[in-house]
Amino acid sequence: MLPFYSALLLLLLGSVTAQVTFQNSSTTRLRVDNGTYGPDIEEVHYYYDQWPIGIAVASDGRIFTSYTRGTYRYTLGTVVNKTAERPYPSLDLNLPLDQLNTSYNGIPFGSANSSGFISVQALYITTQTSSRPETLWVLDTGRPTVYNGQGDPSMPYAQPGGPKLVAISLSNNTIYQTYTFPSDVHYPDSYLNDLRFDFHSNLSGTSGKGIAYLVDSSNEGRPGFIMVDLGTGESWRRLTQDYSVLRGFNDVPSYQGQPFYLRQSGMPIQWQVEGLDGIQLSPDGERMYYSPLSTNYLYSVPTQNLRARDSNRLAEVQAHANVSSHGQRGGNANGFEGDSNGLIYQLMPEHNAVYYFDPNDGLTHGFVRDPRIIWPDGASIGADGYIYLNINQLFFQPDWNFGVDTREHPGAILRCKLPNGGSKITSLYN
Ligand SMILES: *[C@@H]1O[C@H](CO)[C@@H](O)[C@H](O)[C@H]1NC(C)=O
Ligand SMILES: *[C@@H]1O[C@H](CO)[C@@H](O)[C@H](O)[C@H]1NC(C)=O
Ligand SMILES: *[C@@H]1O[C@H](CO)[C@@H](O)[C@H](O)[C@H]1NC(C)=O
Ligand SMILES: *[C@@H]1O[C@H](CO)[C@@H](O)[C@H](O)[C@H]1NC(C)=O
Ligand SMILES: *[C@@H]1O[C@H](CO)[C@@H](O)[C@H](O)[C@H]1NC(C)=O
Ligand SMILES: *[C@@H]1O[C@H](CO)[C@@H](O)[C@H](O)[C@H]1NC(C)=O
Ligand SMILES: *[C@@H]1O[C@H](CO)[C@@H](O)[C@H](O)[C@H]1NC(C)=O
Ligand SMILES: *[C@@H]1O[C@H](CO)[C@@H](O)[C@H](O)[C@H]1NC(C)=O
Image 1: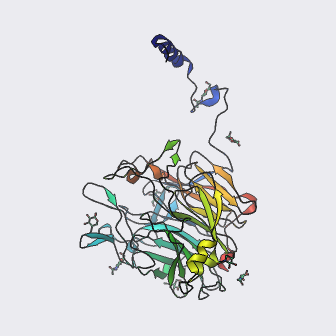
Image 2: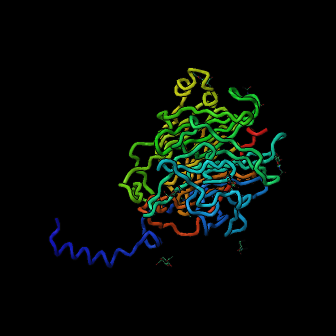
């Protein structure tokens, strides 16, 4: 221990010499981390009203966004100019706030309305085919966040009808198909989180009209994949509670250099418990890459195993046996995207970055990092060869910080150019 007067002297000296700060590092002779690498980032859009979650960019440049509810007036929108969005296709399709939830015998449930939007998590756009217009696919969880008299948040269970996959034609801006799920496929405590498509007619286990692969990220502990045959509307699960889709136990990520615990009002401090989150298909549709939100591991499985139906008694055992671990990637990952070169982009909230996995060398690489990437939440690759990122400052949201909202407007859409002429995958939609 230092004698008192030495400590005092050091303190005084410190106060005159320690003028070099990270904010202005031009006066230090030391190497500093500038927080940045990769291609230039452009600021495309600013969110001043609602905090976004999902994003999808159409071939004509239109940008669609979703916002989970909550207290928001609408849950699906489109960008109208640099600073504003509006409901899409129309405000009437959004259930009014007082109709988002119901209750039976004191147990809260989300609405069972299959024609109105409840709480849209994720969006995806498939390109035009000979039998289908360019389509905005909308994934409605049917599970809004509701608040009790003290303002504490909770999420009611889903009822069949509420959780749904909706197809909107981008030619006539009209819903042309809706898929709902039986309660033994979408459990009451399931949470639909992301979606990908393959329209090939020769896919095993399907009627030949294409398939949707959906994520059930269930915080309650039964995450897994849900598949939908787009021809028959039949749906089924695979890899439910497989080790590869489960949350990382007691995971403590760091955001902006601070360890993060889940701090919900009305509850003790906990850990993030979300399972399977990011998914991405290879451009040939044969392999699905995926990862839980709260682990550092990347996995993949042949899509053939996801398409195997329950009539095959070995479907689950074989799917498990065919899971590949690509090992650690260097942090927790949120949503994924993929380009025509087969790179698997992974949004990295701990590092203000986007990484990609390259199947050619089996390694994860840094792609772009920037101090403005404060929680990259959805990503969408446009026909223009840019990747668009939704930035929503999620770890500052009140529901994770004892009810205190320290997000600062605006949220943002950022974009940057993909390497080596990469662009949106279209090979899955001919
Ligand atoms: C950083 O410090 C240098 C040297 O003192 C000064 O010239 C410069 O204006 C400062 N920059 C900012 C952004 O304060
Ligand atoms: C920041 O540092 C990285 C290396 O980590 C370097 O590639 C990049 O050019 C630097 N950016 C600026 C703006 O100095
Ligand atoms: C953007 O659109 C909003 C809503 O229509 C409007 O109020 C605002 O003036 C527009 N801003 C610009 C810069 O055009
Ligand atoms: C919706 O949930 C809130 C919060 O739990 C509750 O106060 C309200 O009564 C519920 N609405 C219905 C119609 O059950
Ligand atoms: C479902 O919600 C939509 C949009 O709010 C509304 O038009 C429709 O009447 C609702 N259906 C039922 C059965 O309540
Ligand atoms: C919009 O397009 C879809 C898909 O092509 C079609 O099924 C539907 O009938 C069209 N609806 C209207 C109102 O034009
Ligand atoms: C299915 O069709 C696609 C596109 O025509 C083709 O590339 C692929 O090899 C076919 N797969 C099988 C298993 O036949
Ligand atoms: C594992 O996947 C491969 C395709 O990559 C397939 O040929 C094989 O049959 C699968 N094995 C099992 C046990 O399902």
